[in-house]
Length: 431
Image (tube, rainbow, N blue to C red):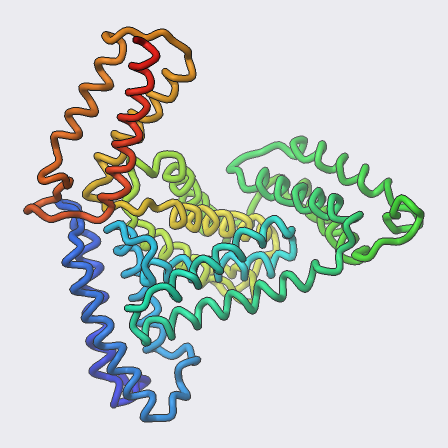
């Protein structure tokens, strides 16, 4: 490995071995992931990071910010480890935030590239970054090496976020509804075009909305109620022009992505469909470690871009379909981020119990909304189900394989107590 400094070579090989073992552990679906196994790999990785810190501090620490081979390997390994922390229910720990930070960075890059976003898009991202910083600050046991790499990620996100805020901060309140409408129209257009088949007539209503917005202008400007010219004209006019051009391009292309780009479109569409399905059924079907696989597949497809454009196998850069591909890519990353954020603070070993209790709770609330009175016979099935779940506890705790105590006991116990409380209220009303 000629591109790895000699004094970092042993560290690189050690980290690479840890990543390989984590990948093998991810493939094993015969049993639930054990907290002890994850923590053991985490401690080994931190040991390697501490060695790297010592080496680089000795060299003056100049290479922390470089995207060299070592940093790329560490970044990938931390991302993989972070989804393991989600799987064992430690969602509010520092390692668990790493992959979310990486995904947020990609989302912000895409927003900046597309230039089509609103304050409503930026606000939840900004809030999540603040939450992640709070998690790191509260984690007194977080190793310095990990926080160094994570802070690097967060700082990169904050820089792009500040740039995006700056581009729209001068938009006057009078033009905010127009800007939001233009962004919405553009996204609806690319959403239609991302379908495997569509009719250009589906774009006609959106074109009509564009014309209505255009007709509100006087001498090329949107005016305020007092006849003034609000600030932010250039931004909204640019969005309007881009939307007109996009509509014409989509109608002319008849929804056809250029032939050489078709395989990329098919793969991205399939990934988006799978992520959408998981978004609907994630409580029952998702294993958090699978999210790493989706992220790697998206990363592989995105690597086929040059200067923000997807290139064909022969090196050419077809123009037809680029905006659609970017939309599907961005939408896939957004779904991935949503799934990462929705992870429950419950180990996957407890998720079957958590899912059952969630279903019982929902049924009891539906019964409560339906109005009474209810007989003891009608409430009996819910009482039996709760009792059967309660009987799974050993010394007050839900155990995993081998007598282990998985993470998430508090969340599951709280859910069980809530179900009992609702059932008690229903019984009281029945009496």
